[in-house]
Length: 224
View 1 (cartoon, one colour):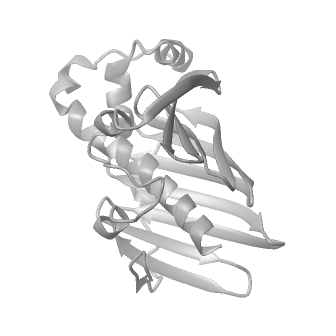
View 2 (view 1 turned 30 degrees about the vertical axis):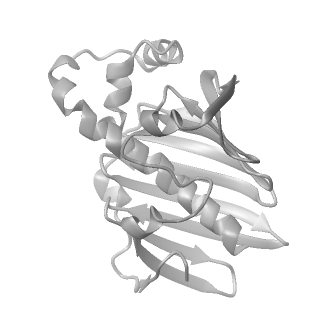
View 3 (view 1 turned 135 degrees about the vertical axis):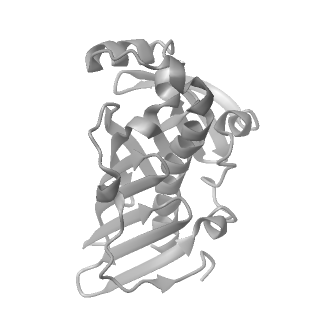
């Protein structure tokens, strides 16, 4: 169970930090993004890969992805991103136990609030420690395109209407990435996370992404 939680934890981090890296890249292009199009028009353009400027600004605008979790766990995960902040809410069942996990990040730290019924655990972790993890989902967050080039592209698939490239990260572990930016599916030998919705026009307040301030967090390292 510890390993499964770690994979989920890293996956949420992966989604958020990829958006943050794009937010940094878009600063030179911000002057050319004054046009506002309807959500349906944007989604049509994005699905064809012709709206890279909009994609680079996603983290500045904010977006939200909901995933279905299946396999050794069954549940859902919703990740909300804006600029360098993100929030994830996961609810899943494993071995007959319902687990509720909320994860927050300010770009430097990850805060996790876990409720397993009779046991509750609140932790915080430096992102630099997270990036050292030896895990199939551990990649160089600074440049997804460069990192994906190290993996073997094994095909394509369409997820929620968006064409994704499928990469083999390690034996038994694949990731399906939309427009070299947003992972819409990750699959390991025991678990699959697949996007069921992607809101590219979410109205998000950064204050909504702050971790609760009235909670005491235990600092941990991933290897603990």
